[in-house]
Length: 361
Ligand code: GTP
Image 1 (cartoon, helix red, strand yellow):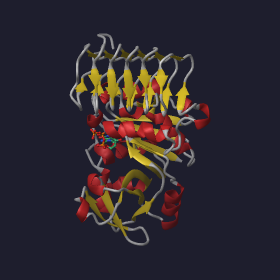
Image 2 (image 1 turned 120 degrees about the horizontal axis):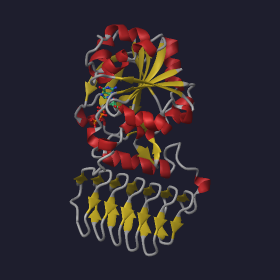
Image 3 (image 1 turned 90 degrees about the vertical axis):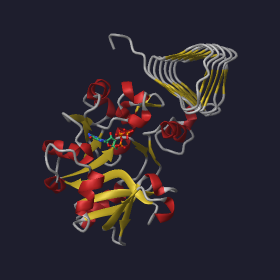
Image 4 (image 1 turned 90 degrees about the horizontal axis):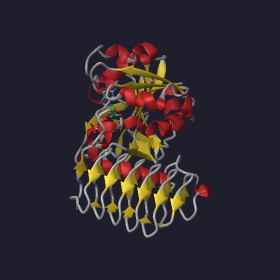
């Protein structure tokens, strides 16, 4: 089966992380997000993934290539300008088979898609939307369907008290190619707001699917996705048998300080004596944490330098950033690639620090 991943968004909410790394390959426990997507989709017989991208496709290609390392065939469709979620699928028309999956590119999940695919085939639907139950649907598109699954209406971001149900669009669709006949070429079209509403009463179905699901598109949910994997709430995380007291170490780590699990350290991480990591940290390869520094509830990507006595809590630190001596970072801070937080700086909660890249990057 083919799957098309919508991967052409701007990722504005995850900036500045997504200013230098495209969301589909943003690292989660130091592996590109796409690795998790491919592993998940392969379980449902997906052998080919089409990435519908625009923004920063070169960066995605340099990491994911032809998909060999992901165990799938990977092909790319690049939009000359953002076409929206429906227009992007139309742009890929020449590559698509008669029936295929469409996924939002910013979800991390272990949803079971088999019932959705089966429902789609059994009902002869033109499109079947996977819906999931959420506690608070007010940030999502609520889907209203009858007992057979035929969609009757959409309610976009309802007030919590007015929501007709808690079942929301999970960004996981099974589509017949014929749906593309109704999408104009070379135009910006939204599948959620334009294509699906026009298909109500014309073979549009929805089915509740089950499993853990998280949209990694905001800093707090990006962090949460790490803890879901690390604490075993989502399949696809590190093997607990490789961890000791909840701490998983990569190769050639040098840990003289204290690490409290759950924690995940990639290869060649150095934690000096007197430093304290955890609980809840994901530390990228080659990152160094100096004495007296403390890091908790945070994701540090590869090659970050944390100087003496710095304190980091609830933050995302992009690749190669430096946190100066005694600096305080977090909560909710996002530090861009290669940026430096000067010694002694106390950042406001929610601070965003722009990337500082070398000239030739
Ligand atoms: P924000 O800017 O933070 O809202 O992020 P986003 O635009 O990446 O995400 P949004 O939730 O708006 O989009 C849902 C999914 O559709 C994401 O996986 C996006 O990458 C993707 N997407 C949104 N617009 C486009 C588009 O014009 N083209 C393509 N190919 N994908 C898109």
